[in-house]
Image (cartoon, rainbow, N blue to C red; front, side, top):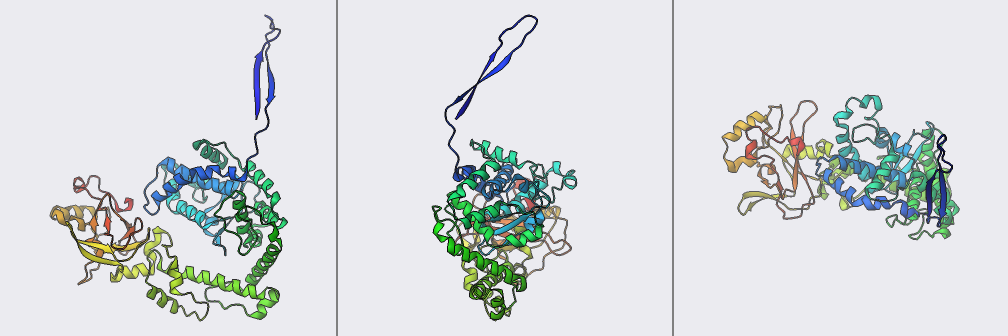
Length: 539
């Protein structure tokens, strides 16, 4: 620790010449111990629970956030890029929406992002790899938090001038984040921690690599180096799994136990002592380089055929079998994602998945329905849930599965779940006539109170009515009200051009078998005359 003792003296003071000077006495009591990589991530650990709690408000519930909550999300993600992936603040400040949208998924369930321009140089490109958990955080920010920031009144006159609509990270004023270093410092101050800058973190991590193998050191160095080649060339060069392996190495150096060991490549062990793995690491990189070369002439596609042995051998006679396995695995992952995207935010039955897969006409390397559904969760943005052809079909035929109408004590009819629903999943729709608020008030004034639950109140200019299904009682009309115990959230989807408004009911949290479905009708009697009517968009 170094202390500076400052004394102010004024020797030789005369009436005609007043002078003073500072005398600095330096007291050395020993330098402070060097921080470790783990210390660099202290603020991320301290803020994580608060950060996740805020994300839980906007997904799947989509509740509006306070300004301080938006700041926490923004600062935490900026800190993730700067401290966890050791990218300079300029990368945060200049990352674009387009670069986020064109991110690529690697074999190891990581997402590779390339930022082509930043403060260091317009000709350099930064590359880093987000884990699946981190990608989820970034996606929730992009789809739920960022739109709220852009809606700021202060941002409307500056977006075009400053490019706020094109930058990925935007401030609470809806403007491009312009000083990520200050944001990082504010996050440390909030949690009363000594600030760690990008320069400090990078130096500490680079020092910590001394115990790694030469191959591992090369991976980390390449991860931190911004190429002076063109962005496209740099992207092709670093698109390989080496980016992911380097990201995992940084996690290991920081003592992050979530970084899995290298089943297929160089990385540190849980204690950072894998120096004996260098021969296997070198071979793995050779396999990856050969695979990258094969993809240039035989890219992985949904309906493509596996490159034959001759083509694989021409690429690498030594690794032709490994190339065969990798190509098949990559296509299998692509096909599974394709199947899941078709069903969107509604879990299908195994028989339905199986039938849909068979209709694709795939002759080999075909995913099984059971494997597709094994770890199923809602996919795609909530904003586009109604675009799924599967959900559109269910809205049309009203054959929602997993639901049953039952007699509920003290309530009459109600709806219960016969299978488990995941948070964010579309459970069913509210199917009925769509009327204006004025028409709704008139109808409600002549409706018995016990029947009032069959109406939604929202402002809407459409007057067209839904097509009815004779002999079918839609589930959505029988779901009971609860303000405190609601496990469903209604969401209005309006077509861009013409068509019928659709109200989907999404699970607020996991719903278990036998649990009654409930949602907040959102109307209090004082609102029936028009004051304080809640719009369905804000529910």
